[in-house]
Image (cartoon, rainbow, N blue to C red):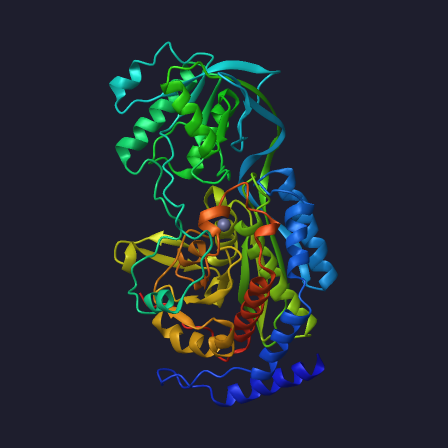
Length: 534
Ligand SMILES: [Zn+2]
């Protein structure tokens, strides 16, 4: 530990000597290879990343925003940060208020035309039912508003299959994949056009379909159907399950949707995600003219409205302590699994990066801070709240590039960078530049020690769909790494299979040491990282 401190001091002195004059060509990036060797040794040989992952998954359960499981994970992480000696571990609360939700009991059985237990899972925030409800199943199949009207008077007290049958198109596709030399080359040679992080696009794929889908939901509500059964898009018995859909308009801002949801939550009929195999089977039985009867028991518990919570801790800086480098990911998860890959692995690797630096006794020049966000799945609430409380805001301004200018708080002016992990268990293969070419030679140098660990690709592409957007939204550097997909989109993303078991320990160790190295380098270099020029 002491040896590292001496090395760090030498770097600080030598890099001060080579500080470039304003406007001059930046000096070549240098890194402290001795310090990085120690980071790699600590992270690969004395890792605690799987232990942290176990704590946030199995031990404390799913971490649905605002819910008791989330609060348990917060408590666990604060205790762990304290035990490691991180400074000032604390919770930062944010609005809007939301209601906690816990699934207490659930069973669904098909009784006729022959019995089988239905493989299904209630959507988060679904209402329960009193006692046992037994009713027929009907398929609501309407391609237009007039076709929909034919169902008036036919849905009351029945379970409604809402959606077409699921097409299985992947039996010949591999379940898990890693990037290959050729796929990495495609990333490296890409332009700056955005790469969607999540497949599938917007629900309904267009305004007309969205509106019709909302009308169907409204009709089920008005008719007082017994419940809505949605097909899960995952295959092989895995269930994709997220939150309830509230009848609404696609243009409604998310915060208003949440209020609308709060208003009508109590009246929402149960919404249940059914495995593709069983959904398709029921659909075929109904179309074959068979009477399908379903029996449902569903008990849920709502907890009183509460604020959301982010978890924050740091390793204080020294001569540049007002400049902050951040690492993190979102702590909230969906409820069907235990949020192993989405985003227990991001939490565990961010925590591990902090632990490694703390264990080595690093005295960084800039402050290194971890941020674990709530409400990501509901719309990046936690990270947005952090950015507006600490860093600044965007203000509409037609004369400014992109139609807005940024008003920074003092901490925002001096903010260095945020490194996020939210793509599952796959090892790091490189990084997205978010369109900032000035970072290429810097990140190239930072990745050099990891070439033999498979991380060397730099892509000009931006990526999104996660908390970096809250930082990018006000022009601040926020980055996400290129990671191997493994089975993220085929098996684990928002599914009942998103558990501890899906994590690959060697990949998480590799990701942790690279993240520790990035935040260390960012905290130690002479100049802050160059920001994107608009
Ligand atoms: Zn996520």
